[in-house]
Structure formats: structure tokens, C-alpha cells
Length: 212
Image: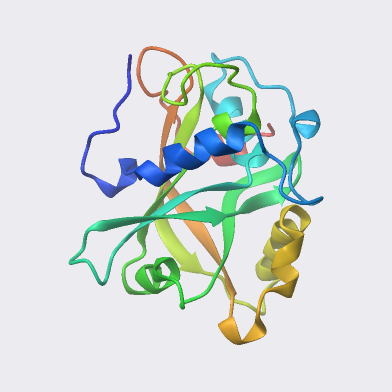
């Protein structure tokens, strides 16, 4: 079936909690007025257009599993459910941005070892129907690369906050003393499953330059 989820490499680590949350979110995909509803989801691209599907998955989603190298677990992969945005709804740029605090292991891990991967699934969007989330026709993507802290005074950080807060309005009110900061994933590899036959070959350049 072209599914490759048993490799130990952190790039393909998808914690069991991810599948649990996928199932629980299928029937409840709206959390407050800022998150996407089934009526706002853009039409899914043709499976033969892998690049468009990859960009669609990232643009339409609002949470996923960010996996880092654990500083506290002897270098074991550590997956954490995080909110994200790659831009305004239906106007994503492909690069996932996160609002993280070093009080949480993910940001702390990333600052020590930036190697990371980020996985999102089509299932929470409600467009997979009744099939299992692991079915290849229910698309999923893992972006691998480096988790980087964005210069908080930069134009990029202002854009990222605007993008994040447009999908996750409560972030604006998160505790100031937790020192939340903008991080991004610098993408180096893309692993996409959107049909039978194994992962689709997509280069980072193709992905980032897509107008999808």
C-alpha cells in the first residue's frame, strides 16, 4: 500500500497520540471562531498533482505533530501536537510557523538540535470520508528539516504572527511570562502519500514555488 511508518528515523515518526487526535477531531474540526470549518476547506487537488496536494494539505490544516530530537530522552524522537500556520487561510506560502515556548520540550529540543519533522494529515479536514486515516487515499505529509527560531523583530516574524493569529486567535492572549516565540521549519525533505503506490517525489523547490 505504499505506507512507510515503521522506520525509526525521526522524519517518519508519528506518535500514537496523533492517530488518536485524528479520530477525535474528525467529528469536531472547529475549535473557536478562528479555526477552519468543513465549509471553508478548499477543494482537494487531483492526486496526480502531488505538489498541489502537498501545499493544500499544509495550507488547509491548523495542527500537526512536530517531532524533535529529545534532549531529555537520550536522543530519542519526541513528537508533540502543535498548532501552526503557513499563511492566511487559503493563501499559504508552504513554510510552517509555530508559536512555542521553551517551557515545552519541543522548543527546548529544537534550540539544542534543530533536526525536526512535521506531520499533518488530511483526516482532520473531514475530506477523507469514512476511510481509516492510514489509508493511502487519505493524504498525509511529513516535512523534514531544521526547526529555527525566527528573529522576533523581523518582518518575517510579523508575518508569521499575523498568519498564526488568523487561524489561532487565542494565541494573542497566551501568558506573556511564558515567552512564546515564533519558530519555523526550514524544509529539506518532503514525504507525501496521497494515493496507492508509495510516496510521491517532490523537491523542496517545486513545493515552495507552487502557486497552489
